[in-house]
Image (tube, rainbow, N blue to C red; front, side, top):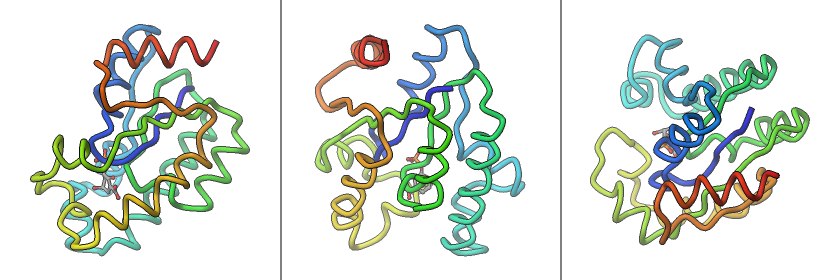
Amino acid sequence: MIVLVGFMGAGKTTVGRLLAAKLAVPFSDSDHVIEARAGKPVRQIFADDGEPAFRQLEHDVIADLLAKNEDIVLALGGGAAVHEGTRANLAHSKVPVVYLKVSYAEALRRVGGDRDRPMLARPDVAQVYAERDPRYALAATVTVDADDKTPEELVLGILASLQ
Ligand code: S3P
């Protein structure tokens, strides 16, 4: 298993799919597993149940995926690695964790107007970014700069750094 973490818009899904294809393993995304378990989109979980309920579900889903440790590439939602318990589970699992590091400006340029991402509607999203950056770095075994590279270049960089 290879895990990808990073802020919204870092390219976790795009790069994760490409990396999985290159390795000929399945791609999975914690948000999709959460949505399947909850029976509704992330946006709706935030609206109906609130962020703390989403974070609990996110933690539980990722704990289950790590326990299974299947041969997959797994992208985590942008807030997942902020959870201390999830970071502890990642460390304990010993799987490679890649931090796709995107600048705040580039992240906003890519996903700024997306209404399906409730965290982007927060007035303090810049602060959220600033608080998360060191936590992604803590969770990661490898950090890759994702601002000025194509997904293909990022995949090659990830594969090289994991060797
Ligand atoms: C979130 C990021 C989203 C999703 C949810 C919360 C966050 O995933 O998990 O909207 O807190 O940054 P992506 O990083 O895939 O957009």
